[in-house]
Amino acid sequence: DDIYKIGNKKYNDQLTFFKDCCGCMTLYGSVIVKTDSMLSGVDWEKLKKKYNVPDKVYFSHVCFYFERILMLKEFNAKRYSFNSTEIAASFLKISSGWVNDFFKVWLIAWTNSIKSIPEYYDSEKDYVIKHFGMITPQNLKTFRRGGYINKKTYDKYADRIENSSMISKMELKKICLKPRLLVNFKEKINNILNNINVIRRLFIFSRKFDYVYIMGNDRVITNYYKYLELLRIKIRGYIRAPYEVCITDNRDGYKIFPDKTVNDTNAGIVLEMNLKYFNELKKIDYFNDFKERIFSEYMYIH
Image (cartoon, rainbow, N blue to C red):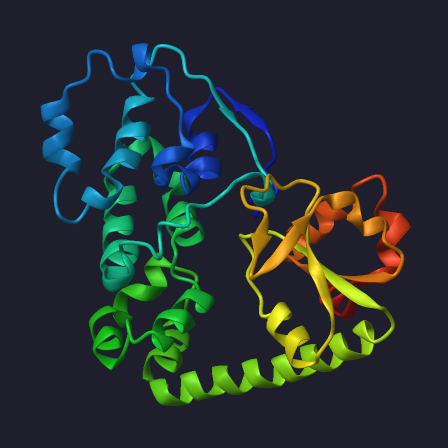
C-alpha cells in the first residue's frame, strides 16, 4: 500500500526517486527495468566485490539499482501505486526468510547497504534507512512474542538502534526485556476479550434474520463461521466478494454463492474482510441496497 501517499509519479532525478522508492525496491518483484540500459555493459565483478558481501548481500540488488542509474545517460522512472486489494499474496509463503536474523538483516545489512551506495544519495540516506527499514514497534513486539528477540538481542544491538530506525534505545529495551510469557499472556487475554465482544455482537445482529451469509475472500481468515455455528445461527453459505475470482465452489463445508446473492432480503450478511476490502466493497453500485443488513467490525470502529 502507498502508506506515504506518493501515488503514481514520474522521475527524472535519481535522488527523489531514491527517497520515494528505495523501500519498495527491496522486493524483487516490485521493479521492472529496461534491460538494454540497465544490464548492458555492467562491470559485474566490480559490483560483486562491493555489494555481494555478507553485510550487504541481502540488499545487493537495491545497491545495484541505485549505482547503475547514476551511470545512465538519461534517467527516467515511473512509480505505480497499488491498493493491496489488487494484489494476491502466495499461500505457499508462511513467513519471511529473515525472521531468525531480523536485526542482522534490517539493522546491520540494511544500514550498511544504503550507506555504501554512491555519495550522490548522502542527503537522503538517513531518511531512507530509518523510514523504510522493518524495525518498527509493532514488528518488535511480534518478534518478542515469537521469541526471536530477547535480552541478548538488546545487549548486542541497543547502541545501534537509534541511528538505524525510528525506535529509541529505551523503547527497544522495554520490548526486549519484557518477559515473553507476560507478552504472550497479555496478547491472549486481549484476543479472548475481543472474541467475546465479537460473538456478542454477532448474536445480536444474526437473530434479526432467518439465516446469514458470510461474504469475504480466502486472503482474510476469521472464525466467524465457528462463532455462528456455536451460536446455532443458520449459515446459508458464503458469498463471493464482487472483486474476487473464486476458484472453488465451497468453503468450510458451505456452498459459495455469486455476489448478487446479497439481494436475498431475508438474510444478514457477515463481512469477513479487512478495512481495505470493506472500503472497496462500499464502492460497488448496489452496496446501498444491502448495507442495512451488514455485520462488519468496521461499523463499530468507524
